[in-house]
Length: 154
Image (tube, rainbow, N blue to C red; front, top):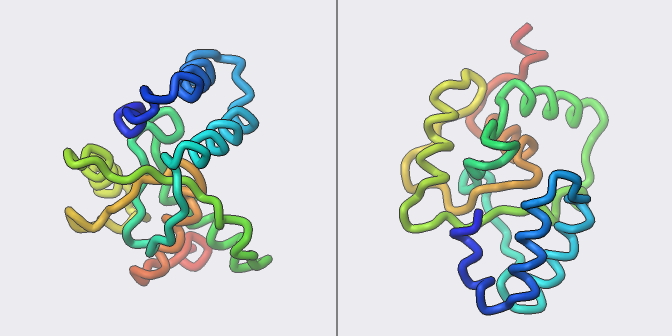
């Protein structure tokens, strides 16, 4: 993810926080991530942007490179269908803008091609790559593509 954070070099306190968080195995990742987000907003490196579900892929390093599971996304959809959802729960989902080399999109397409539950996006469709709420977003993509849930398929 560091290729997306080159601008952080101009902000040594932010870069130190990122490096300390990613380098420590015992990092309290959720609270430290929240601090990084506050710093990112402070330096205008992070901004809020609404995205269409079909424009959001999954970052190649999400879940230590496992990225996303179509089966898990489908199961999340089934749970949400059963109990409902409040949009406030995912309003702060996090994604990185796709770099010009489109490396995350390339890896995400490969992942989708190997997962019977994930719809394969067209090259150039992915504008951001998520690192939070990834499975929920992929469940939405699945629904938009008319794919049935695991519960329906059984």
